[in-house]
Structure formats: structure tokens, C-alpha cells
Image 1: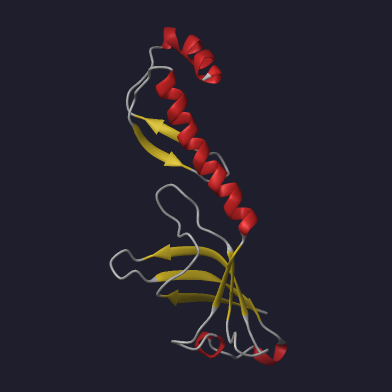
Image 2: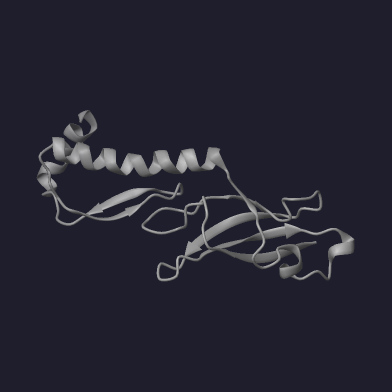
Length: 149
């Protein structure tokens, strides 16, 4: 059995989803002082910019004896937890984000200073949108120059 949880932390090492970037993945362990720790597999992090509170959403695998346990029993309020980021996933997401900046630099090298309006750095189809357009008759040559840049 798994239990969906939302854990709110006042600070975190996990990058929240936002600004065109996906959330970090990772785990949060409770009861780090002893051996009866629970592990939440985190699949989404959001942040409330006003309060600074980061909400980590994920799931905890429960044994048959834990089926009626509430989230606040697994992760007691105001207790210490250990946050671990999936470093391989973060590396890939970081590279994807950096690629957006590489596209911007290539555009500048081609003397196309169209202002970027949106970046989407998710792995299912990353892109950068720009304000403006390139005349259809100039696109093939521009694309060739962009690839070289």
C-alpha cells in the first residue's frame, strides 16, 4: 500500500517546479535519528513565494501494519528530515536548461536579437519561444547559420 503525502518544509535542497523548469525528484526520510525511518519518494516540489514554504508531494510505501497511519505520524510536525535530490535527474534537467541559453547565444551570434518570451525545459520537448518572426524566405539560410553557431 502507498500513501500520497504532502510535506511542507521551511527550506529544501530540491528545486521547485517553475519558470519553465521541472521539479527535482528525490526522497525525504523521517526519523533520521533512529532506524524506524519512513521514506517519501518525492515527484513534485512547489514553493509559496510569499511564505517560502516548499511543498513536497510524493508517496510512502507502507507495510501492512502501517495501513492506518496518518502522515503526521510518519513525518511529525517540526521534526528533522533528510532531503536527498536525485542527482542524475538534476544533471539532465540542468543540461536541458543550459541548452536554452545555448540557443539564445546562437541566436545572438546570427544577429537575431529576438527577445525570448518563454522557455520550456521539460524533457518531453524543450523549446524557447521568441517575440518576432523570421521571414519565410530567410528561414532556410537562417537555420543553416543557427546550426553552425
